[in-house]
Image (cartoon, rainbow, N blue to C red):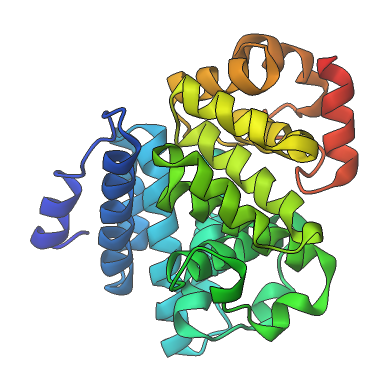
Length: 299
C-alpha cells in the first residue's frame, strides 16, 4: 500500500504532452526524482502497479527513477542488490527495462559506488544501459559539455563495451542539455572528444533525438553535420524505434523520416525478423552485428 502522500504524488504525475524539448525534459526529470524519493521509502512495487494507468513514455521515466532509488536502498541494506534485480525480473514491462537499467547507472554515478558483483549478474544489454546512464549523468554534471570537463571513472576504461555504452550516454546528455536549441554547440561538443569516442556519442544523439524529439529542421541539420558518423546516428534512431516503446510516436516518425527516409511502419515491418514472439529485439542493439543486419534489411 502507498502512503497518502505517495498516492497523492502518483495521481498528479505530469504527462509529457508538450512538444517543446525543454518542457519535456523538465517533466521527465521531475518524474524521475519523484520516483526515486518514493522508491527510497520502499514503495517500488506499489509504484509499479500504479503506473499502469499512465502512458508508456511516463512509465519509462518513472522506472528509471524507481531503479535509482532501489540502488540507493540496496546499498544501505547491503543485500547484494537483491531488490534491484527483483524489481527488474518480476514483470517489468519490456519498454521500461532500458530506462530502469540506466537508472542504476545514474545511481552509480551519484554515489560513486560501482559493484562488480551487481554488474556481473547482468547480461551485455543490461550492462550497456547501466553504463549509458553513468555517461549521461557525468556529462550532465560536467562544468562544460566538452571532453576536457568530463569526469570518467577508471572502471569505465576496463573494456570496450563499457566505453561504448558510457559515451552513448554522453550523447544522450548532450541532446538533453543542448538539443535542437543549438546544433552548432552539439556538434562542437562532440568534436571535442577523440575520434574513437565520437561514434558512440553520435549514436546516443541519434537515439535520444528520436525518442525525446526534435523538429525536422534541427534533425536535418544534425544529419548533415554528422558526416562520416551518419551510420551511428541511424543506428541510434533504429534502436529507439524498435527497442523503446515509451517513445512518443510523433517524435519517432519525424526522426525516422529525417534520418532514414522511411516511416515507422515500414521500419517495423522490414525488421520483424529481429523480434521474437514477445516482440523483444532478438539481437542485442549494442552489437555491430545487430547494426549491420538492420541496415541491410532497410536497404
